[in-house]
Length: 633
Image 1 (spheres, helix red, strand yellow):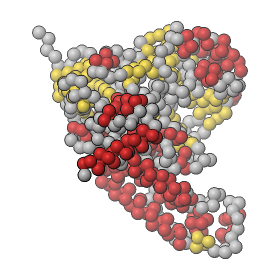
Image 2 (tube, one colour; image 1 turned 90 degrees about the horizontal axis):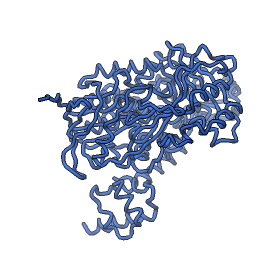
Image 3 (cartoon, helix red, strand yellow; image 1 turned 135 degrees about the vertical axis):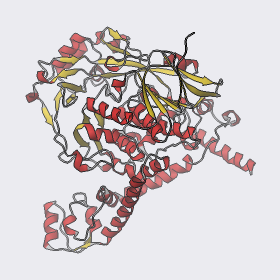
Image 4 (tube, helix red, strand yellow; image 1 turned 90 degrees about the vertical axis):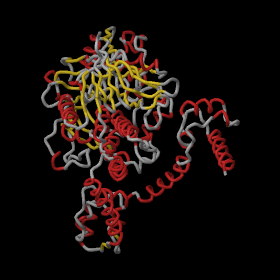
């Protein structure tokens, strides 16, 4: 008789991508005995697509992960090879940090952190089945079974399968049943999830070719440098440690010849032949999609980015594709500087199974299966940063469930993470969801620079932020408040020194004394520029000066948005009973009733954001709640 290996832990994390890493670390750091499964230990924190962290809106997510006690920001600070603050010509709400990573070192560095974390074990095995007890909507997770039959009993399971479930990589008529980078796909778990009543989607993403640096003519491209002064992602990273020599990226463009090659071969593209079933991301289209959808454009940007310091592989950003191999060679060779290009790895599309995230609570726990959580691309999102953010929240909430504590749910006025998760669990997403600054209604308040001020207290309450870091945050808050009050009272006269400084920055000269705060409000001036006029300026903690400058410059806008948040929170704080029977509310439209029953919103605010629920339905809901309250009283 065969003996089955059996092990007991408290939490299981399925997958070791960016979501899985954050989930496992959060659980383990909160004292939960955690086992993390991966199809390959060598693929931990793998970057199968773009070799960077951050970017527009994604930089916000990384800062928020860091503020809550996550690892992604620390890890990229240790392994970046170029760093750039994006959108600096615009307002602070859309400033976003982006860093090129050394892909191999990023993965190695994260693996070192995981391997040296107490309460965490890493196992290379494919999880084939979720073990539960009970039936219907009363199922409870009991653990997992691997493809080899081993059983790991656990109180919580977190699914962070990324793009590996029944994965299929495709270019031209070549189709291989593997995960990204030719890694083993996970082919058994989907059937187990379907048996548990979980609704699955089929999504697609893609990646461009990797090319040999030695075959590139950089003289035909525009060199793209990193920032002279590097700003770290993590609030705990000493800025002096990230002032390192940086590598360059390069910018070139497609042209009419490129587009003609693509158009002439669209019938050979699996995207257009029907070979690819999955839905791809609208905001990160393949080059063939771009050529078709933006037919009026005669060129598209192409970024040539290094994959690391110790490899000649370069990433062709902006040209992901699933065209056949011969077309890829012709297409890439038509781009300026790539005339003699050597392809190391072909571009490909990848299809994979994921879920409709409306099956989850905002805690990222499945509504029908207690103890089963989910994070990352498995939830229908795209991107490393979106994945890591969800993994962190899923990990925190799995630990809190085990500890019999209330879940952490961030709302849309608190964090981009709140916007991300709220959009996933309330809206119908028929394509991979990508975070963008435009998705956040309160983006002036949710800046990347103040992520610590918004979220570090919450991270401390959760148990992921040290006492020392928390006390430093409190001191930073005190300094910001005190300094704002001080500069309002510092008056500057019309001395020659003052007028010379104003002239240097093309600012209107003074005819009478003025407060330092009034000068800071001028668009061409800021707190740092005016330091020579302020001899009594105190020594301040890192980041204080930036906050003082932003608060003084944008005070009116910030106050207006804070009032909007107050209105938003009135509906957000109107909680809905978990067992509310929407069939009892007679005036609700049928569509609204169906959607509300499916999503099970936690609040009237969340209900108002469900696709198919109208403002009139919300009015009916509010009236019914008031009547119910009256009947109870």
